[in-house]
Image (tube, rainbow, N blue to C red; front, side, top):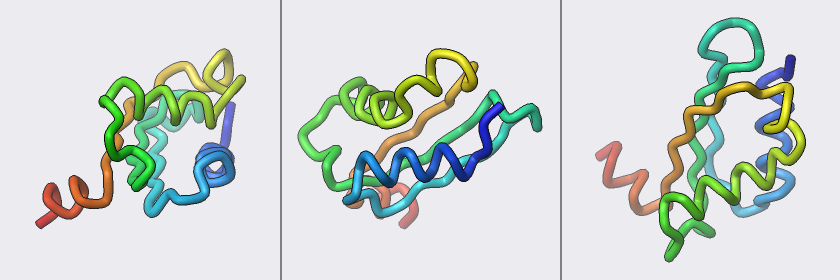
Length: 84
């Protein structure tokens, strides 16, 4: 089991330009999460590359304690467009 705050800290530490990280425990079991990550470093990356950069930030947590991660990644511009 992993606390949501641990996931957020890992992402923010590995990706210091991140503007927004939202982590939601989907099941209450601290192993199935949904995350929204907004970062200017995603510019020019494919969606797969964006997700891979978040997975790298989470490292070994993705190989065990986190069983599922529904991930949404955005550049700041895409996030603003999505949210009006």
